[in-house]
Image (tube, rainbow, N blue to C red; front, side):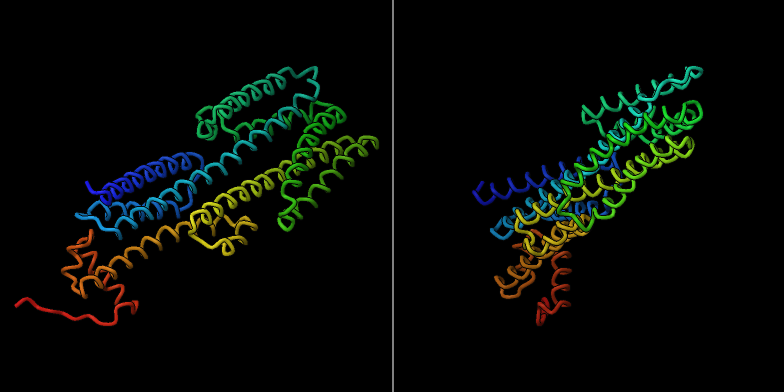
Length: 358
């Protein structure tokens, strides 16, 4: 086997490996959330290109370059899928942490003397939560969101039911004291995230204002207790806790989107697929949808471009003879003619001369 053919086969093996890795990562992402449609499109385009390359009966430098470029784009797709999966795992991980804050708040409240059942319910929820934490330690994210016994949303629903019972069973001061610890834990995390996202000032300003409202509510709940307005104090601290959970949910999403945008931008620029200045704004704004669309566009457009370039080069080398060009190409005759038609429609080919068999 010539060195050219050996390099070509090595590139095909690389494409197959990266495509297999991309398919596996797509399935892993699909177990966590519905993947963006752009990934399906990108996988299909690369599969079509691989199939076209595999049909080659002879290899030239142009075909080798196409194979090498296709391998690089398959690697880009695989990396983008992994980065998107990492984003979703970040959201799931922090969702569990928020449940932990809530459980700790309930555990910090005293057990009502006449309600051992509530304590049992809290204990059961805590055990379920620990099971999910064990899955988290093993990176079993799919099991966390899809296990048949209990999922994070189901645990949250159970927490809300227990909370309603505690509001009736506890003294207002006891309830407020327990939830203050939950609010404080959430605020500590929120402050850290806001500092990390300081460069994203426009995107986090709204949450800074919401954070001030949560702090004010926490203080106000104490004031209401001192004024002997227990029911209002309970409602206020609960509102503060819900507000803290909401802020953390949204900030975690911004945090995850920012990391994904940085990763996608780095993939594009490191492979020289896009000029750095063209994607910098999207990275700064965390525009992951547009960056993913760019990646798909790069994969598809570059495949089309290399096919067009190859067809044009072959026609130039054979003085415009389609029959001779097809023989030297890895493409079948129909695909080659379709590409000629497209080039003619686009104005790349100025004229077509037909010669009949005599």
